Length: 433
Image (cartoon, rainbow, N blue to C red; front, side, top):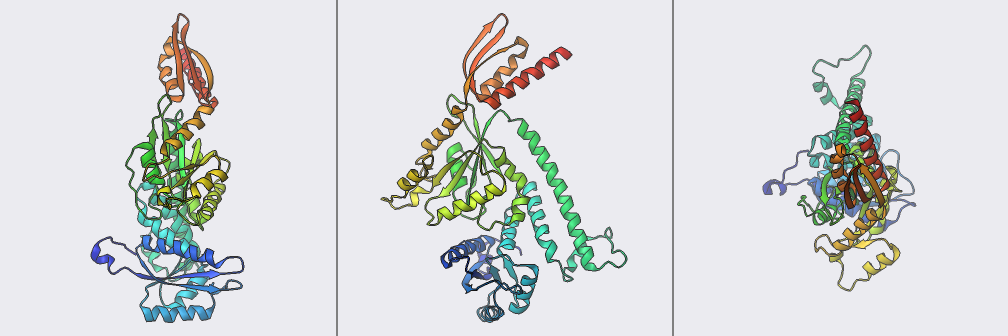
């Protein structure tokens, strides 16, 4: 469905009805909060929410997720109120989605499919478009039926039906072929990124992670004095953005902003965006950004930590950054409470700029604690490596002796090892010539 942002067309946005289910394993308040978030997703998608339906069930229906009677009730409401789209907060199986559309008589989409559509709208770079395409094809594959005849137009005479092969089997084969091709292209993009990353191996790296719309891009701007675009929309950032901090008496620090996390984030999306999230895996330090003004911020912290665990990054060093303090009441005790519970945390406002100096000091303290006193003697023929030492640590003294250049500096173990490898490579090249 094509979306337009013009004023005239926005007056005719699709009308959506949201559906949630309460089971013995969930609380109604939790489902209502999830539906509120779903409403924001629908708005980001470009539709208007006209109402919500919540059904209490002992267990999900294998045929409809909800009960057949509730599905018929939704069908009557959809017809009576002129609703265009029904959005389920829970994942629907292909059979459930098909059955619901037959009863309701309108397009039915689940949270997974909705997020895929939003990602498709927001993808700007070549890599992001590949990742969204991959996730969509993975989502589509089990949902193929004989109705998906549009795939036959894409064959162009190259893919033909084999003996005894149905149209559905051909369509599935085409989607699998597309998935393999997209995986190959993404592997190439990842390899190119690895090559670029090697060029900045000696730089300290920080990655911003957190729930979508927690203010990561705003924080990135104020930390790095940059102008990354900021939108009050879920999933406004899909591609990694890299900027740098240049602290006094320290090497520069690269800061990466990444795609926001969300509860019920589809596993297929996490897998598809793994190459983008590699920027998080290679970071030395994570800044986990939390919207402190959100009444359920603790639940969203848990959602972020779940995704980090899925990426095997739960043990990565991190600083908790409680953002949007400017939205709290003037006499709120919440900042003091989170500081007492999370002793290493920082309370900031990316918009007002408060607490930013404390955050910068925390970041610098983390890297400076890893430094140790070093001494190294460089051959005069390797004097160009001196600039690399300035890049990785703090140089205390440089003495030009008859036998070489004696450098005393502070650096971490990994950075010192990298400089030693560069010196060894230089000597090997020197002997070879």
